[in-house]
Length: 229
Image (cartoon, rainbow, N blue to C red; front, side):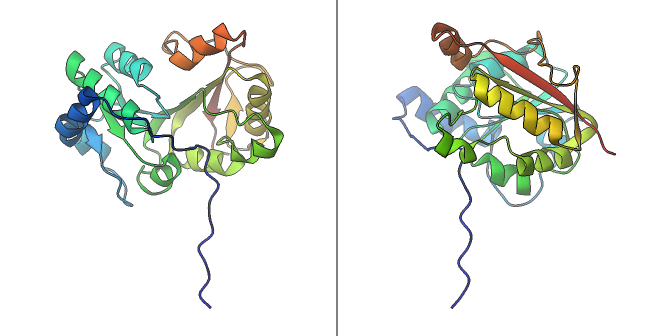
């Protein structure tokens, strides 16, 4: 009997809301120029953007407004955003067209597949993960994306002076991230040991962050540098 492929644990649930006419139009019209189709082979970053500027990758950009702001305010950097929810992808593509942004590309696929198969080694200057699903019930903690194998992959993709920047409004998840990162041999805290970072100026406030504030949550930022030993 042939061996069955092992099912991987998903860190997200795909809830596809209905696309607005504007989002669908943006997908139809802007994807050829700003979308990246999934293929299991490494991208040519210089060809993709037409330059050798540093590349920042964000996983799970939501509606894309904060990522668009970062791209607009940092034209000397290139940005790639990954999001599985098509309405968010359509919304960001509409914003890209509306604001005339040139240094931002969009992907609509499972981030783990993309990281493992499509992002070249040592090609990223920063990986951003802002307000991922906390999977706060104990029985669901295994679904959290921030685990040692995920960090192994990020370390392989970052340049030698690269870093990761995570943020969450769930304290328990923040502590989980801190422990997981502190224990990883290829990352070191940009702050003192076990110390969270101040929110850097380059990170805009996100929709999920505002929701967290309304719910009375704190916000924790973690910035760790890759360190090849």
